[in-house]
Length: 98
Image (cartoon, rainbow, N blue to C red; front, side):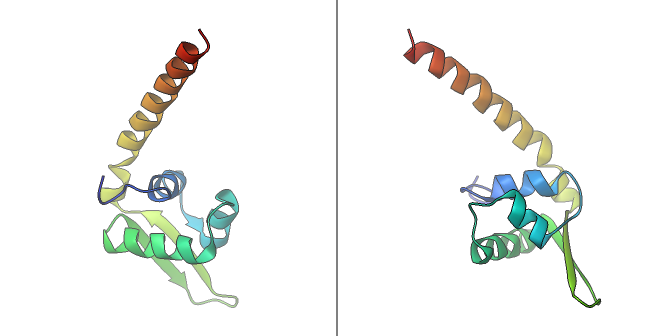
């Protein structure tokens, strides 16, 4: 959890896990994150070898992100955590309404 914990990394990994994506599209899908924070998080994920950054020499420049094999191995764990959260949130809400 020290590597992928925090507010944004699991969200970013989950979105990139759906397929290769450009920086601008990531920013659209996570409107609450600033450009600077998104760029920093992506750099950290790249250093951890969870994400590959591909730069295409085009005009305008195009940068895309995709998961490495190591990053792909996290997706089932993130999905399980999401399911656990959903089921336990539902239970917690049921218990508070009684």
